Length: 225
Image (cartoon, rainbow, N blue to C red; front, side, top):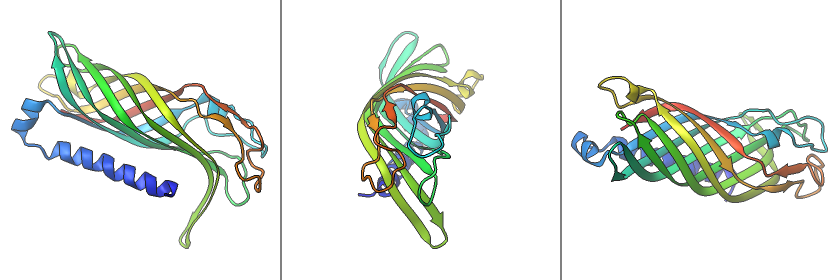
């Protein structure tokens, strides 16, 4: 299955989870306390920017993407709630690394289970952690009205854990439990050595470096609960 097909399937899955959550009746939401988030994501990955490919150039220090999550409460304490659910991100980072027909693009897909510990009287702050499937590839992609030309230089997948925190800005206002949310996550994933896989296009070379340091993900979006 091609990378963009997997991206499409993941996008549909995240959208369906969000739609399913939003379509619940007000009474069901009050009872279940379900939470749904959708966000614009900004990956900041120092070890990606530090790669030294055979071709000239480097990856940008930040990328762009979209994320979504849905959680349900499972335990309630005196001043906090524990929620379990699912979380996903689709993101990409540009570069000025010259390929044969286009600059190299780093694309990533993450999906997994996650937990949120919400605390405070308004439950506007949470500590987050998760574990899931993380896929990364680097490819030359040239899109035009005639179609898309793509050559994958390198790809890898691994298990990825994250820790982070979320602030529900909207829930901090009186009589509001939805609105702007801000989050920061630190993903721990070791993708190993980066190198050209086919040897035909010498872009990354035989060893461009290691992708084994943390990935930081800034999220800005909308939360509803």
